[in-house]
Length: 190
Image 1 (cartoon, rainbow, N blue to C red):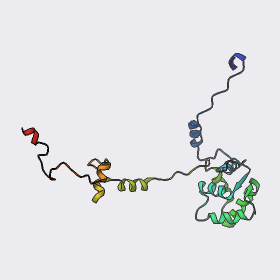
Image 2: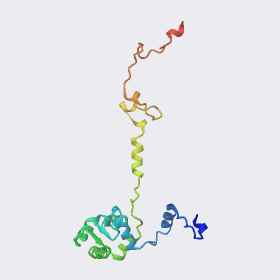
Image 3: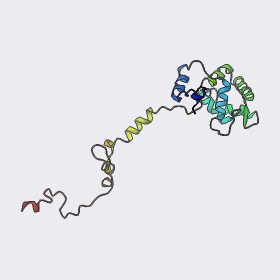
Image 4: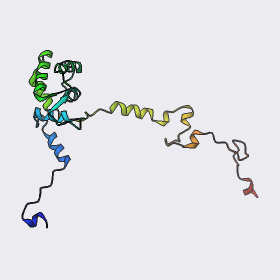
């Protein structure tokens, strides 16, 4: 018996992940998640056993790097010094707020600015890396038309590898000298 036959409404289908991601990207000016939500997300990032209530120094540094808080003014050394003042491997949200306050005062940075950057940096993840320079270098190094010496012999004119014929000097044991142009024509002449 189905749910509709019982009179109870069937559950609404969930929105696809792509649509949710698009909604998150639409308005980047104002963060849609709070600082506490971000704290919970980053405290679980990379730690499957975490409940989201305590954050480690490495998770905090990843968060700050993604939010671009760590720069020339605030470094990971600074965050390490201020984090270790709590004498714990993991700290709670309340202690993390104290940590940020102490860090902001010492480095003469606005606490509100740091929190705004941390709240608006998006979900934990790998920051995209530009592949522009690497692609050009790879293209240059894999262009078979620029190969010289024995390496040039391993590829045909189109750049496709010759396989074993390009790596080994295969001996012609047909009985003819190299350069003889009428090979295998003796029987055809009769």
